[in-house]
Image (cartoon, rainbow, N blue to C red):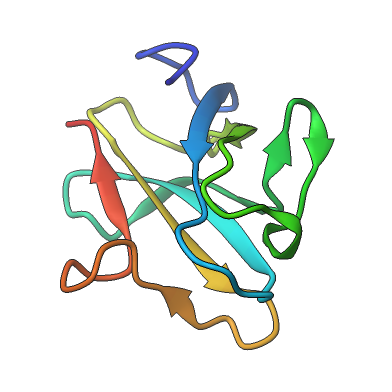
Length: 115
């Protein structure tokens, strides 16, 4: 869920996400949110961080299997972002190696939302 569908350069968009860990495992992942323009490459906003559950930081290696995690982040829009339509991409990476986690088997390591 997004706090708003329109925003100006320099503002922040609040993003609420729900996650569930599907299997046991102890790796520590970071979540990223990228705001990209029509080319799908140029970043216009970025946030990387540890998931939060109900206002408290909760690293993924502490999650229970199939327990809902209600995650909240603020995505800053770059001050030089021109007017236009943007897509929100999100994904995960392992903190030690920066290796990206596959979102869905066979579907790559990020998911585009919106447009």
